[in-house]
Image (cartoon, rainbow, N blue to C red; front, side, top):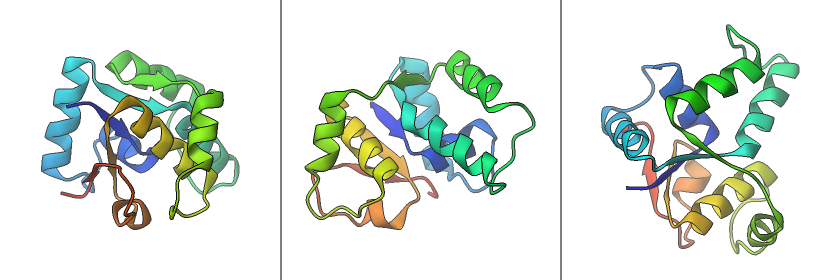
Length: 134
């Protein structure tokens, strides 16, 4: 199964957080092993912003952490015009630009989104979501 990790699911998975559900952990591990685990480049921007604002900490620089994530086998999806346009066309989805770009990335790849974000999990759009807490 191809999955895109929302920012929270990425952090929980990489940092082995107890918050990540067992089912989600298995799905993510299988996707990584199969080369089908993805992260939007916007997630690294989102984390860097939270670090700068003092709302998040890592034991290494965000650049080193990103490199570690990519070495683990998670594949980064760069943002492009097609993703930006698709993110704009997501009817009924809340306005958070990072979430919209992450959702557009998952839809573009035909992948499921692993997230704990209740707004994304409850969205009535065509996105397959997996709750990162289970």
